Length: 640
Image 1 (cartoon, rainbow, N blue to C red):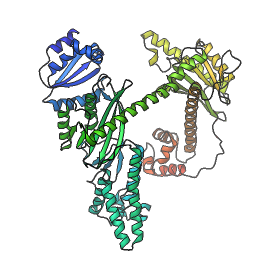
Image 2: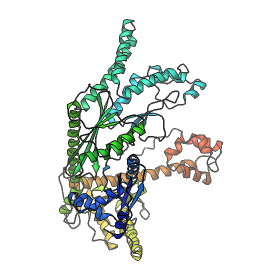
Image 3: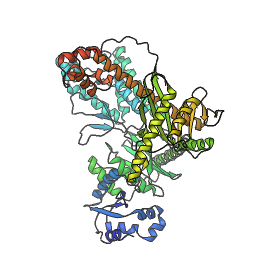
Image 4: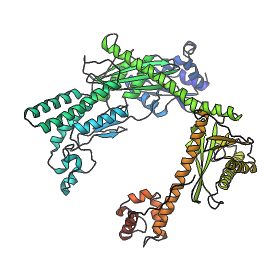
């Protein structure tokens, strides 16, 4: 143990708190909480602990410093620990691997005429109601479609009261009965709120109540011989029943009607050096969602500890929590978790480990789904390795070179010899490295001469690289940090033998001819090699060939996109030159504010008039010119 660390450990207080372990670079590598900082942290440095837990041994070897924060009790320690883990993402903590933001549905009942909004982030201090997260885009889409069919609420984003004052006509949705049309002024906020409360009940999982109400109204309309209204209620009822059927197809779980509380089931499984958590969400006695999460840093950890980490990281950020959370074994800090959740949601949340009965069966089903999640992930990783790292390794074997971890591909694009450009795309480890992409305007070649253009681009690329390397050598800098100083392991040319020959000529002239280079001919997808008369033909199913095709196609896409943007900008400049009153100063102001033609076309007359040197009259001329009908230019597309 280092002297600094030993000094900190020796003087730790016997008090609740959070400890923060850092490595020699000052990075936070582990965050933990303790009722007694002294006893908890000292335990890490016990020989018996390190023998039993290899992960702890590795952690201790990396510790260079320890900070700590004293708190009032275990609940405060839990909250601070969660915040610090979220902030620093420490390497040795158990982390939710899936960091994407799942969508929620938001309803703000404080508004007069609220909508159902799709959001991906929760607004702090927001008093609106959130429903979700929706872990399947299919279930979210089905839910939104059902809401539109069942409830006559507005889906537009217009200012309702402004429409009422202006006497605007209602939209088509109102005319066909899909909206109550509050924009007409004939619907009170109270009437609209009553429907929105039904929507919220539906989103909470109480579809059975909505279905029963619709069935009652359908039967009443039929008895009153109002068959048109009865048919409308029938269609709405079928939309609710469709949600039921889709839910049943998506979930292979035990049907449960024994209890109606909101319950979440958490299954934890470790296999193949991976740990997965399966979350099944039950609302109103039905499974409304199920999703698997991978947990980093959870190898050899007890399932109870993994479940506790998941609960803390997931529910303390979620928009709601169920009344009950089912786990195989209660976490060590279950009491503190329950207290934190109770305080956050102002109601009791119980973490329960069922030993028998239907809840136990649900738990076992969640664990089965977690195991399937790991197996799917393992299969995905194998497929991904085959098409990336495995394909790189095989490519090296095919070409007789070390596996080319960095592949650079070049493509030329022009239209009838104008606006000639080139692209350079980079793949590292078989995956796109988009931050390393570069693009070039052809400077020295006139007309559509792809061969000379390729020679120019390769020369400029490696000349820049050599100059950067010379500068970095003076300061001992890292070649990997320059724009061009990191050289490829393989150069791929989009073209045949002649394009490859011109590229090689340029590289050899600069002294980088030792870097392997090949061409990929489009017609037969053959690999062209230097010094080989016959091209190399690989099966079209070969992951190696498919890797080269992906790299080549990406270079083609990148070149075409750049070429189109330049041509569009040139066309826009030309168009602006023909507008009376638009001189060089105004043209520069317009292009500076709206460099993309589509953005300028979207601008209003008022926005155009606010630019430097512009006025309302000239802004109107620009607007009219941009929105005038365009004649067909007869262009057939770019060459690349």
